Amino acid sequence: MTERTEADTVAVTVKDGIAWVRFNRPEKRNCMSPKLNRQMLRVLTDLEFRDDVGVVVLSGEGTAWSAGMDLKEYFRDTEALGLPGIRQSQREAYAWWERLRWFQKVTIAMVNGWCFGGGYGPLYSCDLAFCADEAEFGLSEINWGILPGGGATKVAVELMPMRKAMYHALMGENLTGKQAEAAGLVNESHPVAALEARVNEVAQKLLKKNLDTLKATKDAVRRVREMTYDNAEDYLIRAQEALNFHDKSDGRHIGMKQFLDEKSYKPGLGEYDKKKS
Ligand code: COA
Image (cartoon, rainbow, N blue to C red):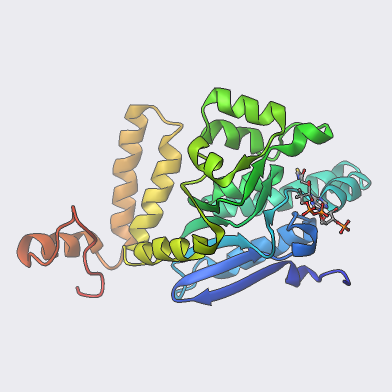
């Protein structure tokens, strides 16, 4: 086929509050080229504050989620441009992974197939991750003579116990979906035929909750990991006070009213009805 345009490297559909964003280079197993990285940042920027988008799902067209960085376009071609080219392409990749880590909406990785190397960057950036039993996860860098860069080493150590991360990085052997679930790389693994339905179910549950509270909570979970207990306690007080300001729906007072006065729901068993004030 003729080479894809930059705009065509990412596919997007918005339906029922969910933005389905797909790596769209199936013929190249969705490996990440500079074009794809630039387009992803554009797509995420367009989606971030849309009122009709409450959850973003990141998936891949074809048999791959993402085969990692594009060895030709991301590594070989940019190395030929020297240090400015290398730094430029790194920044373009890291920029959208960072945007995803702190995205305004909850993000879900739906790993439908291959997930290698640089793919661990966006995998970690997504708040939740669900994969197909048939997917394969690998730090393949060791197999072609580089270390797992682009954050991949950090991702392995953040998500897995030390011994498992070390084996994974040194051996270059792949994990199946179920093994990735057991290792902590994803929340759940399901047969590929059931994957989208499960992700849709999770996304629909999230959409019923207060979206400002979800944003404050996901940031809190990421931030407190690197804090002392005292710093975390203080951060969480301030994050809640900031949430009180940003949540123009005044959700927590509605939640209290529906539980304490109206007795229409129990917070221990589900969320308050945000359609009723
Ligand atoms: N970079 C550049 N090109 C890649 C690529 C990558 N990371 N992954 C796949 N491709 C290309 C192949 O070169 C091939 O291109 P061609 O049709 O022009 O020859 C095409 O995508 C299809 O790949 P192919 O290897 O034939 O598909 P497969 O389904 O048999 O195998 C993989 C899939 C993912 C196992 C295999 O492509 C692979 O090992 N990719 C590299 C994975 C990797 O190490 N990524 C880490 C990068 S940090």
